[in-house]
Length: 172
Image (cartoon, rainbow, N blue to C red; front, side, top):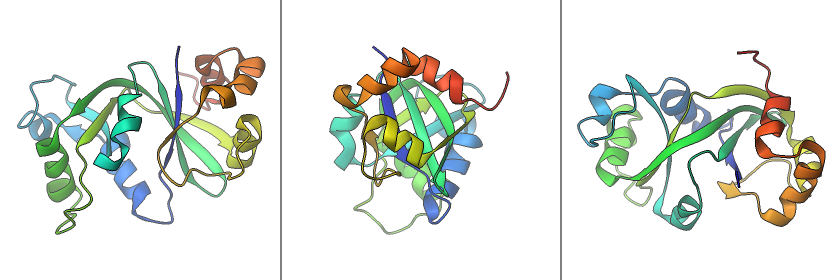
């Protein structure tokens, strides 16, 4: 069954810049191919998680969706998981070479989620929090929406895929 994950990518801090550079723009093949034998195309949309989220990463599967909270009570992007890879060298290269994060050894990016092209969506944090029975209208960390919280979403939209289709703002 398709799962739903929530990720903070707020414009109020570096998270949106990281999201923009690694997911919206993507990582060039010239970079990722030095560290991975995978062929993800000319550009790969990659979201990285630190080792403290390894158990969450293990629960992510191909076809699951990630909703990205970007700010101002709004989720603006969603992306379907295409693949995942535990790849500390690639994560380090992205952090140090692309994102210019230096000298912060406690913040690895070892657990990578390779995403299909992100789609534009629009749903307020408050509406999603009400739908999923959360107290916060924004995620403070990467989280999997538990099965018990998914009941209301499935009652209203039947599935995660139908929910994403309903909140999409693009028509392609």
